[in-house]
Image (tube, rainbow, N blue to C red; front, side, top):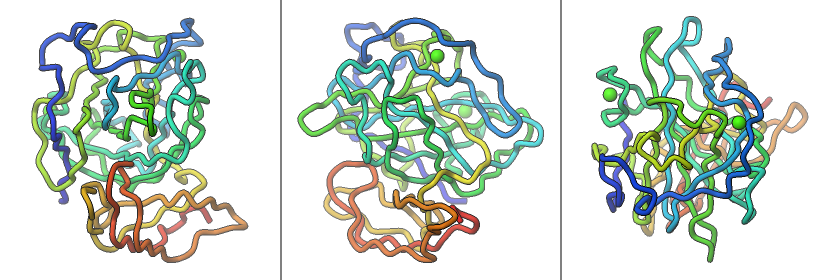
Length: 305
Ligand SMILES: [Ca+2]
Ligand SMILES: [Ca+2]
């Protein structure tokens, strides 16, 4: 099995201990307050903790790469998934946009090898990359991932979303949508990142890094708007990568063989995706410097017509 993990060029200012508000690298968009509903239960075909509405969004104060992780437990009949859904930013954003439409992001599934519920030993299962849509609207963006077997009923697994956390001249925007209706959700949420952080799928993770949300300042706690399930993966063309693409000029986030790569090209029944995709020089999928030299993909069966 492939193994893909994180390495961070710079550890967070926070350690494993409790965070104090004054030294947290994370900050929040203005909390517009108010609850718009209760926590939803897992549905037949979607893993979900959030209630579908964000009351806030958080990001890294100084910018960088931010990753947010949600833990789920495998339920009967849902041991295999092929889609992740995520919302970016929040409608209450006071310095709009909280995120940026068109900005690259990644999403993936990690297992929990020792099944203790902690993600520090997470083992890579599948990933995809896409471009943010519908920022600041609470609209879930659905993105296809390779068909993933999650293990046995009751097993923990992790859904991770990551993106660069800055716009040009505006470090510290707020991409991670936060459902504050349940501000103390328990040990199912983590976050990590940093100014010099980068994604390198070929390196092993450092155990430091993931911060459980209960260790964040109270105003940064809640539920990520992140879900996983089965579906068609949205309305843009995803391709199965045929060969690991080479990163150039500092890009460590190029898709590898068998990853999915979402081009952002819109498709529907009348406008099906081309059978092949060739990207000679593609901007680094983590939104940072550099590019991927050659991305070759074949159409995913059944993808968007
Ligand atoms: Ca809510
Ligand atoms: Ca673990």
